[in-house]
Image (tube, rainbow, N blue to C red; front, side, top):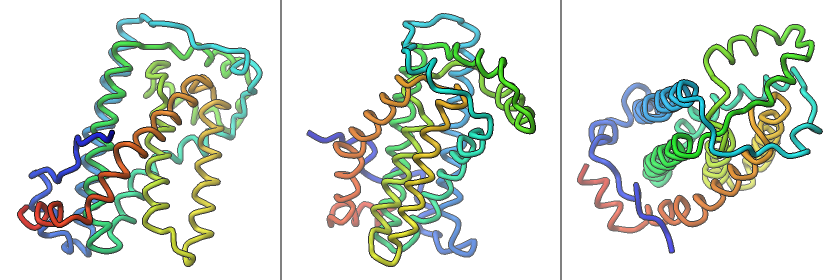
Length: 246
């Protein structure tokens, strides 16, 4: 059984698709990045502030592992690399006509999946109360980074970790597009960077272990049963015709 939502191109991409070679070939990636900023970024801030205002959590996912994992201040650096994954997927999806179609379908589904996660944030909120251990740690030169993070991001929107879901899917789609031998080491480095990001969400106490595990499960399930089938279908004459008619 596969999901079909977002498996056909939306009309809003029409002008960007037709003029995708303009702006030095960056018009389509720019449109996709802006869509993520508006559709995912603003949505995250709204749900995050709403949960903070409501101040109610559905359950406590804390485990012994959360206490065992230490605070590692410098891990705020790999934690912050999430914001490179969004433009990475959009820009690297311009390899050829096939990847360009997949690029649009991938971002459509990523947006829909993110909105589904927002529903979880609202209906089953969890407060990230393990941040207290960060306040007890000497952060040194990383203190301003944490101060800025806490100004923007209140300790909510815990599970599933969007840091994990979105970054993993971005790596998986790039891995699909650049799986040939010429890019073998590039992809390996990318996976290493993603592992560091995964560790960082716990060592900065931004997420529980539960958030990471559920994020990986949701990401894998979405990729296998939703995104990958939709991307493979982009080679069908039906989808090619849908893009030609934009």
